[in-house]
Amino acid sequence: MSTDKRPIEERIAALMGKSAYRDLRDGFLVGGLPRFTDQDVAAAVGAAAHLGCRVGVMALETYYGSTLLHQAALLREWEDAERKEGDTREQIVLTRFGGALAIQQMAGGKVSSSAYSEYAYLIFSRREKLEARVRAAGAWLEEQRFTALRKVKAQLFHEAA
Picture (cartoon, rainbow, N blue to C red):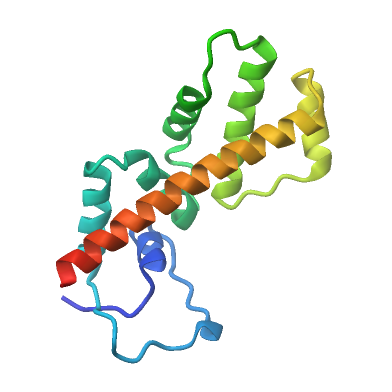
């Protein structure tokens, strides 16, 4: 049972099968904070999901694991959060497509501005409207991710105390 000094975020990436990149510019941790095993981090992620932060945990894994494993589930949750009575077809399509692009960007994908124009043309909309929906979906995903990360850290440090 080894302990590791890597940040919690990198440990979550390692749980998703990604290599944990250590940036030397971050410095080195010498004592002070408790050290957690990989099992501790996995248990804290599971506890955060169990405590009602399932969507946030999926966002964490998408961001730190650079994976689209949870894209369909995150997209459903985003659509449910944004659905309003009386939405037009254009609003529904923009919400769905903007959410999909935001999830892909969260996983590390890049979308050029010319691609936004082409996507907007394909769905019979304006580029600005699509970009606004992508930004809104990105903000929602970031909020979910930060909430889950807070719960994971609270769980880890609560257990360490």
